[in-house]
Image (cartoon, rainbow, N blue to C red):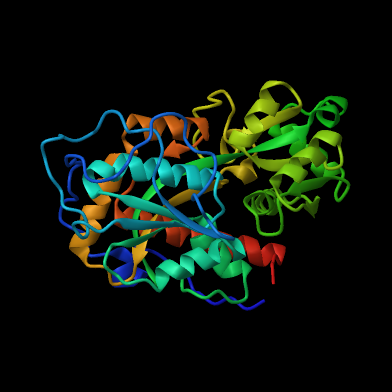
Length: 384
């Protein structure tokens, strides 16, 4: 497998535009008076752009109107271009977690940045939407809601992608982290008295190759979390890729596979009713939704002390976007992340809001890219 991009060793190795022309002090949260956009009360839409054709569609954000603000309503902060809506590209289908997050974020940022149109452009694991933004004019009017896949996994998973994840974008801010969770089929866990991560690791060591774990497909977050777990513990289990997370979850419940690394939000109902047994979350910190569920790094298995995997997502602008435009976007969107309506949605998705400076986000991306390069190469994972 040929790997296209090389990851920097630390922040100083990143290209200047990837690190951004960081202002001496990032602007504080602020808000404008209302602009011409229609906010809709009622539940957040579960579907994507109205009138979308195929994998692409666009609509002005129509999610619950934001309540509360971290800034003063009397302060003003001009948007990238007065009177022109911002286009926020989501490289995944309508109705998914990132689509819902984008629509809520767009509405929460509306008082500061004006109208934001969310456009779904899915395909090739997020590569098509990311490429569209990479090739857009660097004027702050076209942004990407990118994720760990588009910027840390796909450059290693695909032998060729149409954009350069490092050089073609400027990071604006991380938005949130979504933990995954190690879950076992309940009957299997009960039969073998596995109620902790140390007990599970010991069972895997005594039964190499006898267990299988499911995922939503080759290169998915669940697949790579499982491969990292195997790498660090020195164990072996057979990976069974399914066509999406839902079939993998059904396979786990039926005993077709014995364990998986699932998205915490989708696994939560089945954990609570006992259909599956949760052992630990994959992030360094406990998840707010399950505060008693330990991180893998804190379960007492020495080899897992550095384990840290999450499905993060954040905002990107095309390379060469002016620094002052990035500053305005950063201030507007980090303010929006503090809005109650947006944080409430994040709670329902088991996501942990985590706004950063552009520099901090660039460093995170570099670290994540190194990590996933090692995992993908070790697993010999590919989707080509």
